[in-house]
Length: 323
Image (cartoon, rainbow, N blue to C red; front, side, top):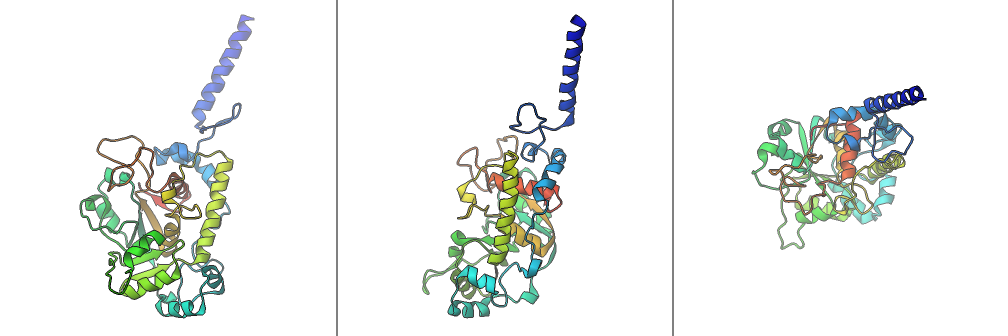
């Protein structure tokens, strides 16, 4: 009997050791089943996250990510409106006539080899990558500030600025007697539920600034892709991050997602900076943004879901995630 008990104990210890070496673990795994590694559980190290490759393959397999040129789809409005865009924007003939004179020419769209997609996370202050960011052919940002305090960390180049309904008003005068702020970025990527009338007014106010109004058809493809990926992750019990209203649009889509797909459509390779949060708290890094103090320790500059998606995209070669 003693020999039998000893044999059982050896078998149990062997099984425990085998599972601990397999590297398959997750948060919230069911009892009696092997735990798999998740994208979220590997936030501390991108190298360790490679173990989640099978998971990310499943999340993105067969998902039609918007990239422009698919089924005649275009990234931004140009040379008038298509039938689908006309119905989605609810514009009348007068609006469309005015837009036609203000929209960019589709044959002269932007094309870049490498681009930097720069977020607002405090992780940018971990290393001085400003010069590296500025060396990219194009840089998309979410801030249009003038401070030079953080240039060594975040750079100064501004090719594109992501603009939503909440921020476009900054560049539009309330009346003919008011002065509006002039964008520092060369181009504006306007997305979300910005009225086309606001776009037209901005183009008249700042004709020197190239403004790209993301096609509503392109946005619809992005929303479908997002819903499919997040739906798969949740079915697997993935802890994909907080949903912070300030970082989501009116339909619940991360505000940074459409600008990312825009940049991927005009760039061969997209490098991502400033979208992760430091795992270990440091006294010299205040969060969540590099330019201000956190309102709470749990805040994320672009919502946890956006970071989760970027890590999955990175593991599948869709983007190069730097920080």
